[in-house]
Image 1 (tube, rainbow, N blue to C red):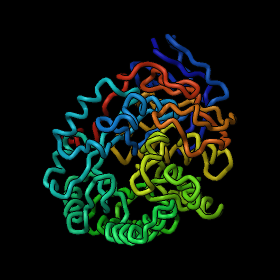
Image 2 (image 1 turned 135 degrees about the vertical axis):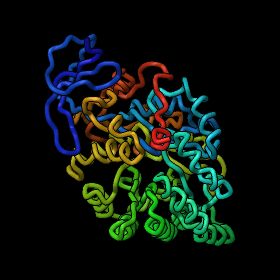
Image 3 (image 1 turned 120 degrees about the vertical axis):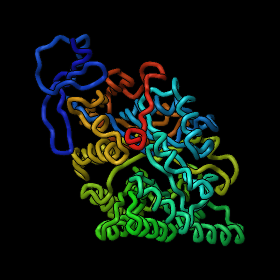
Image 4 (image 1 turned 30 degrees about the vertical axis):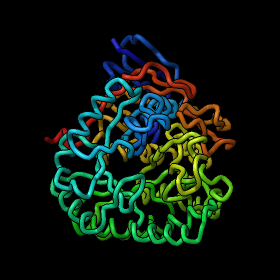
Length: 450
């Protein structure tokens, strides 16, 4: 007896698409196609696309921490509503810095997530000797900052090199936030001395040069050490191409980007201020810039898309001035819609979308083939999408505690309509279904190898 049959969908993979029923038992896919077996539940998916559930490998749910901004209950519900079935989370307010921190966080979240989750850890300059223990405890990746941000200290070149040498020995993986600490510090001092509190300080403080210098350094050190490194939230084409140069020289380095770098313009901060304060900031100046980002995604130069979901309410964003208000944007429930919209317009293929938001992050962080793919043996994480459905995004639709989206008022084509996590319905038509606690912790590759 099957638990679930999804009938009549068109399955989309990075290699192509084909019509097939999806058959589920005990939370796993047991077959694609037609089989002669009864099912307790049958879902009619005629006219819909079946995608693997999105793997969002970069979210901040602030839990434990300042959960007025987000917690795992609301954040994972928002994820499910947006077609996401696996997240990898880290919060700066309560950073995971050693194996005991990780174990305590897993215990804290045991009944708080609607979708499956991995957890990453922060690399602290004075705790470099404990990285292997974190990896073996199940951290999905180790997060490095090259500048002091969100209260996390910078890992400068010497410590960064030692970190990467160590990580390379046991084939761990690092996600690196790349902005040069010396450049961002100098820019902040100069702007503050000038008395600047206007919204234009954001792109002048968190500059293109700061990002490029740090990305170049990290990519070079990745090549010299042999470590696996992902450059986080890469914001504009020149830095993508700079990273490519080191990859062609043998570096094991990949590129993450986010929808804000494909859709939001640099000058929007002048009007919206705190609601466009994130870092690196938006870089788009022309339509050609956006098309080049989509071209780089389609070509595989941008490896995958995450959300970097870092929510705050409007009130929290508007507290204080542009220097003191929190960084970050909500995005976990809109990202799939934004890339489906791009596929609808032909800026990127649907097959490449599946690779970029499902399979590639699952592979990099050790969750494949359990996650990121629709195939026998995989978890039955399925997002059903209505490809031609158009809607206007509004703040009222947002499930996150943030309560707003930077894309409000934008008409998008393509919408997730049902999300299944291990065969259970967790979202329908943009609203979470079921109770938190269904989601399970998915340990990283180091735990499986130890």
